[in-house]
Image (cartoon, rainbow, N blue to C red; front, side, top):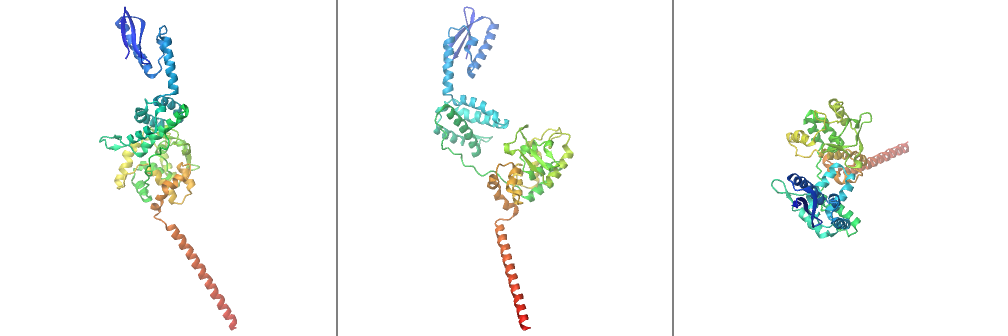
Length: 414
């Protein structure tokens, strides 16, 4: 820590820079006021030294050690550019990458960096991080405990998120600084299938019958459009086209702020069914002209989904005796209902904002039998219809043959 000292009635600053003790004289006379001023200057110097932006010549342009300290700083900077620590590289990498990310993703990245990656690797030379270090770190994540009781642990999905970010950083660092990528043959931990637990159609009708009247349009649209929470909460009236019966998804509300959709593919036009069309007409009577948002609070601001869940969603499920599920399950419900109704899978994927039908079949197809109450019966129905057609054709042939024989016998008798 820098200190202010006096010699021959003049003040000088005693500090450390580049691991070297430096004592520089000043023109300040030894008075309490000057000591106070110089103390503030020394604190600023310390902050700049810590941040790596200290300019020796700016503070002490006539110093006899200026050339020496400048040369040391130049060599240190060159060393950092060749062999930076993980923390130094992350500072550069983050500044370059953040322009590509949504604000919400930046926030998530910062949390992972500050809570997990920087405490573990921040001070290590990035080229010195090896595969065993990565595996040891991943194992340590499985032992992390949090919560009031200290019994909660990081999920497999969360551990994978942390490791994926680490891999991204090391890939870029190894490419720039030409060292062997340590993140080789380290696969993601196997995750359980996505938490998909759609409602049955009977449950949907039950919820819509008993939910608060002012929220019935909101949940009707959620159940029958498959919109994400951020999409419907950020839905604006200028994205509703009643003439074309389309809802345009062009933005999302995340942490109370409007931003882009989850992915570019999430920008889409959703076709309104009659139920959705009627629900939007009903909602128009409530908020159109009062707010730019389709669904809003009494002040015209977008709804806060945590508040809606607490005040409306959870109590409704409890009232009906239904197992609690996140409101996001309304999106999964829409997908399964469309599949069960026999809609074109490619059309469903477009409505959901999926880039292909792969996820549609991988995630949702196993739930369709639960909704249609048909499992394997399609083949039975096909075979039964074919058999009935064959029997019918056979009976028809026998009848024709019998008629022909009777005609022959009749002509012969004449």
